[in-house]
Image 1 (cartoon, rainbow, N blue to C red):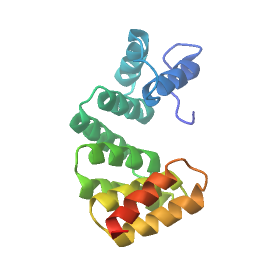
Image 2: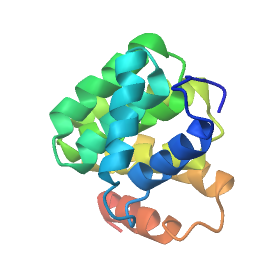
Image 3: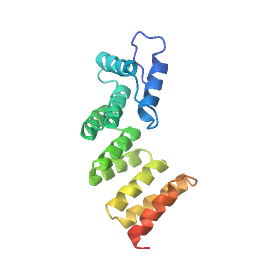
Length: 167
């Protein structure tokens, strides 16, 4: 981890990495109270420690409060405006909220930073389908397939774009 925060624990980086895995893995069970305590202490010690803010935003989203999660991610972006992963994560939450224009904007910001990420193009293709923007849906579907040719979601994306075009 490039960002560091000393909490007086020898194995902080390993614990923080495990916490990140627990929060970001949808199949994982809820993180423990010890994990929540580690996150709380990290943020008390350094409120601007953006990796902890990002995890808090993901945790909030996982708990179902998507509006608060977006606000937390906005806080992270204030400190890390060139962090494509945070823009992408924000877009996911906005899409879940049905705020498709804002989701598209966030995905475009992520792609302006890192255009070679197939997941970003795939997500933008789906948002374009939902916005009924066939040209954008096709363009991002094609780019996504080039970047991740064997991805299992490619067929689902292709079907959604084909349905939009009336095929």
